[in-house]
Image (cartoon, rainbow, N blue to C red):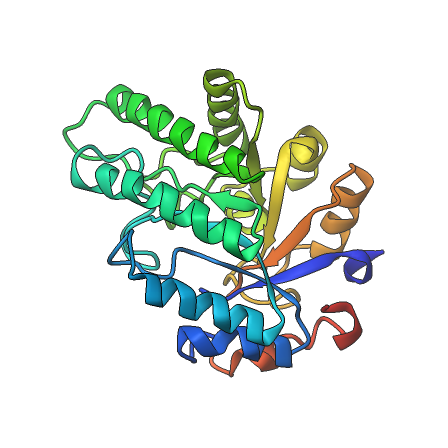
Length: 277
């Protein structure tokens, strides 16, 4: 039990960032991992040139790494933004322009989980109008994901780091998941259960797992405080992952933590090499 029976993947948008994007898959493979995930890599454009998409696919293929999770366009992330789909105007249009591009890239790489960050509240805009726009855009994304046999993920973030993000609890994210599934009738929207974010919000993680493990389409971890590697904080991550397994979760566990000042490959000492692939 513990870490030994989990299927881990590495988030290449927070780990190995000391390297250019196209070298990160090979670095993850050299560290022993065969699965990776990414935030949308092109923060300034939802529609990168075909040559850029092809180059990233080639880097993944050459490294022998499987892309298992991808974010839709979410604005400047890392940075001030937390998604685009609920922001009226240009950012919402960028999200819509990205939906087919991201889904097509996911199809080409065999990725079957697409994460759609909700977006911050906008000062002076009625939250109900943002929620209406969000449902429209999430439904569009869910249909695109369904067309390639993928799951649409909805994630709760944490209030201290993302105070203007409206989904700051597991129930809040689940409510959106339910709205999307009801609107589309497809049933392919699911909860991205991030133990770090939920812990920062003060939620009872064991209770969240009991209540929502069956609704989770993906899990991500980092220790708290600090968002570092397991063992650098106080979260009982091995125990919590055991609880997820016991609750029936069989999906991937994404490593979405900050490696600290050392190179990323030195941050995996908590996980024996034989359990990384």
